[in-house]
Length: 471
Ligand SMILES: [Zn+2]
Ligand SMILES: [Zn+2]
Image (cartoon, rainbow, N blue to C red; front, side, top):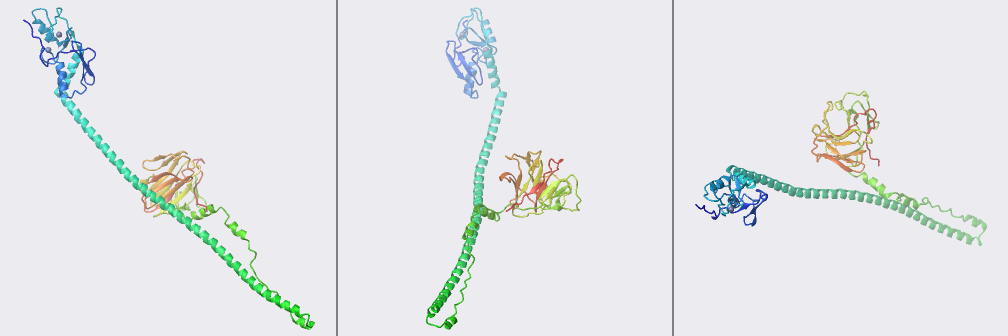
């Protein structure tokens, strides 16, 4: 009985080339028995039609199911091992390929592991569980992409808002800087006016004086002329008169004119010939606000181990406490001291010389801080301070601490307190570089705060000094 030749439509007629087939992500190369090559991309296996076509390629022409233990005949047609063996066992004559009829007297075939692997994969991927898994995977991916996109949208919104805020702040600062310069111009113009008025007054006084001299001299000249006429007359009368008569013609007394001492105009020039810009800048500095305040330490607040200079502008730490009277204002645990001045409103700036000290703390404290207890310096406890440790480690004592890296070691520190805006800012007072700003500094009243830290066997014995602006 002749076996039917399996050539119906849709039934696979293609064999596999070895070593060139891979599924899910690589290209699978199919080689027809006629040597025709055809590359089929299975990269997007989610597509049902592609999947269907792949299934067809991997379907046994005998059992019409996915290959089970596939083998390849020499004609390059594939069948399940059982199918081809069953087919050949029923074959009365020389066995042949059910598809191309090529005869195989030795019944030779060889297993095709590559196809076997691909079939296994397709089987797995077609399972309901795999489908569910993939579905879940895609759903999860979509969800995560949605979340990421929402995040991007949010970030974009924030960036856009930042542009608005930046523009707003920049405009505010622009106006502020203009106002500050306006104020400086105003002060400078006032100073200029004052100096010019002074000069004009001086000129006027001198003119008045010189005019007075001129009037006096004119009067003198007039008197003198009259005297001269009189003398002339006396002289001419002498020829005709008796000597007796001449004697009675007395010479008029000398005219006395009192004029001012000689005026040295060079003096005036000299007075206005100094380093005018520096002179006016110094005068102007008196009107600048805030300018460095001339603070002094409050002796009653100083820890017993602190020694203050007579003028209360320098403080050092001593290993021995000095006898002091009890005060609720005195720091009892830490070597701290406050300035006498307290601030409740306005802007205040002061400068502290720290020189070559190896450690210190300074800044602002709320007047209400607990001075009897050992309290950590932090904004929560009413301290807004800068700190040096180990000679070179600068910190803004915020929560958490912020490490500062000034370009040059700090020798003079500027502190700006803005009560209304609740800000405490620090500067390198030698070049006015901004170091750090605390925000939300709230207190009923604020005190400038200083701590020398321990002298550490003279290593840190240099005093802290409040700088006074010498004008
Ligand atoms: Zn089969
Ligand atoms: Zn064949």
